[in-house]
Length: 426
Image 1: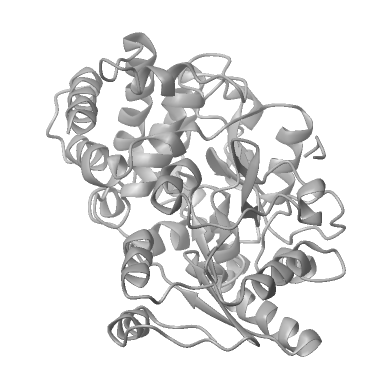
Image 2: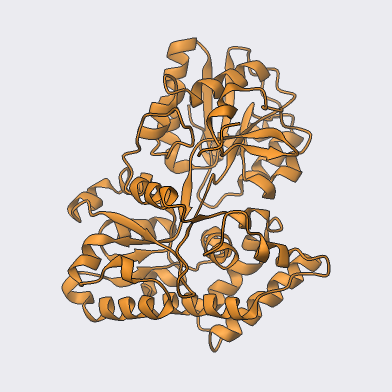
């Protein structure tokens, strides 16, 4: 392997489930997608593939906080599995172990470092590279006289927040940061992605120190000093977030307000680029199509990495009657002459394939490329957390902290530890 780097509604999906097994002809395959923001682009991809090959690809997109894996389990139990389906690496692999086709012999495997492997066998097709970090509006920071490169740790981060807050009115800001801790629909943003910065920020990609501590045989353990420093960063976000967003706001509200220039920072990853230049393009244009950058979640001085990874992979159902057709579609998707242009330009994905010559028209593409080229990226070891941890345990603690239920960052850290220990014990 190389060592470089016709859509169904949610209601329709469940209606299909209730109908039982769905017959799919040899000239039709189904792809189950959990990134609703790229739904339109995937339908363009499907139309192009059908035009070139005669094979119809039905895209079934689910999102909006709906549990995609629960839906897939229902499909499987109903004998209604899609030919290609999305899964989130180590978190979901145990559910589908033995049910996914081995893709090791496919040509695209030699063109990427981002394939999902288990014991040397390839089971996951990567579609993109995504990044987690503290995104910022460079025009706002420039107007406030803040050099993003000067934010290298907790003291400089707080100083920047205080300066922006003092100049909030003249900068046209609603709040310094768009941080939402609502625990039902945004559990993944706090309980998974923001917590991930405790696990990996500042570490080399192969450093598993903190995820290993969480998964210790005797139960989760923690680096209390590191955890408290991280918790104090979360407290900073609580302090300077939009109060209308903090506890009860929505993902759409969070992204739109950032696109409209109402927040200097936002706690969402690079996946929102497609929404900013898509559904929120009018607001983004009115805000000047500002340059978007990304800072490390530097809760300890000197942490200089953002977290990058394939956020999920496409697997192929091993017992599909259309196995060969599904694999042929993946091969075409990975090809520079096939699906890469649409995946990059229409879906806004940052290609994980070396042969791809297309560059995403995405406000995050440059910053991800810069960090990657500089070797300043950490991995996504949060994907190895116990399934459901973010949704059922940690996100609730974030929400309670945002509501003011805990006295300070230290109490928040202790409550978070207790929730994690309890969840792993069950």
